[in-house]
Image (cartoon, helix red, strand yellow):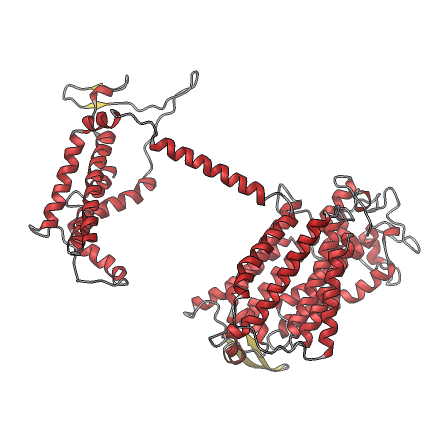
Length: 634
């Protein structure tokens, strides 16, 4: 296999390398320009060197060289040498025998090597295989691949190249002595290695300058790059509108003022919890702006995202100091303030210039019509997500899955999945966060704790939450437990409604998944990690994988039907009780999105909530109250 590959590489007839080399020389010779002639000479000289080192490679790998036979080699009477290959071993170790490669390892190279011989003998076969691809490029004079073009100048040049290359191989000893004779004060190898070393040192210096382990520094570099790369061209833009209408109604001014004030207070806040709450206030105000702008879908999603984000902040801050680190110097504060203001001005400038700089018809101008015609729904936002640009949504839910995996890897170091804490696993003689307190103690009177006894009690004595008894009495809130039990099922039903109605009304799988995630969150906040296990006794990874499988499977179903990927169908039939039923197959795609979002929120609750609770309780991580902080003025 190696010999065949080398023969084709050096352009030995009748291999494909000879056919290709002759065709290339022929193309350059017909160019007629000085540039083509120079290229022809360079290609011919390079081909001579290729023949020479190819022949030397073949000789070094396969030829018999009696002068360098090993001690275990044998030369027979007919001059043929045989050897027993062994591998070098350290003293005291048995040498490992060198085994021949398997057929599966040799087969790919063998197919290509034999293909080189086949294409050379049958150049028409190669032309038929490569012709359609070559036709995609602009061509001049039509030509064909041939094994022997006749007595032509380029054909003779190809033979001269072979002869010169083999001649250079025959005098290889003299060439090597000539190469080693002159002094080499600066070798190319030394120059290369020194250059690579300097390049590594430069990379280390740059990395040490910009990657200092400081999140403010990273954010500053990103914003500075954004301001310079976008702000400088923005200064010379001529697309600024001549007249700007600041607002449509006074309520927009109110919500915008709330956003501005909350942003300023977040920047001035010293306490982490205060900053998180103020940041949420700004997010809720943005939801109000979306609602006033006629985008109820965006407003609903913004409210739900802000709610879940606030919960994530609180869960994470339990293991962080309550106060931020010491403020930077005054000069640094002014630099950060200037960079933040500049970034805000650039974003505002983009918002003003982008609509005026448009020269083509917006793609979204036809979305409203296509949503009804092709998507079978009147909610343009949802139809866009699950039908018109469903591929983007597949990428987005894949990012959510990666984010969930990353969050879990921060807590679960050795394995991806964690233990599902069920009520039956709770210790009978110890309350969660209660030390040695009696877990059967309630805020009003003791109750039976075994499952059989709880089920046997009357509704008056039944627990409001299944695993609520696992918490210490002073950690529980009866009002919160009652409210959670009343609203949990309502929230689940509402999430299902959002998922099914999202094609024609505000909602969809993403919003429905967030509502379900919030429902699980309130169950966890009211009853702890054991209550979360009772509410969702399933691994988050199962939901994440199932959601991505359902969403991607919906797209594959269209391909199996001979249609483009992620094609949806509108199904309508008459049911005896329900009447006319209207179903779009993209609903199943929305179900996949729903499962991914629920899996993400459940993964966050399991890692940042339940697992950190367990570690803090057993003393692996200190609880929030015991974390020391560098408190300063708030």
